[in-house]
Image (cartoon, rainbow, N blue to C red; front, top):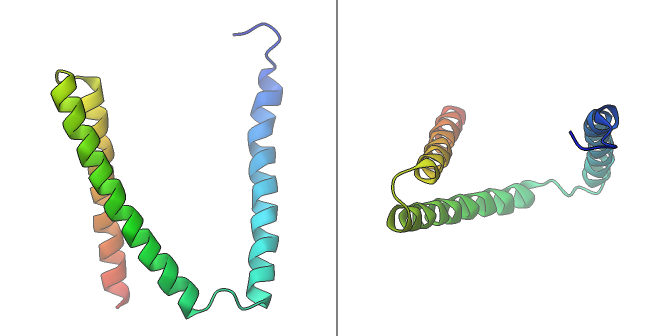
Length: 103
């Protein structure tokens, strides 16, 4: 470890940061609910944004995967990108299954 590094302070900061973020999110959500920010338009916009983000992320991962395969031999970077891509696609399958069970 580094000299002067306080492990206790470091470990206490994570729960404290999560607690502060949770409190801020709670009050932000409560204020938004009072102002009727979370209507069907809000959900439609954010569903479209998540779909667009998912497609862009898929394309970026495939491009990065291709670049890694061309530049480097099959190694750690290849398997890391393959794992990220597989988790990305599995999360899509799970999300599609949940969405199809609701409709």
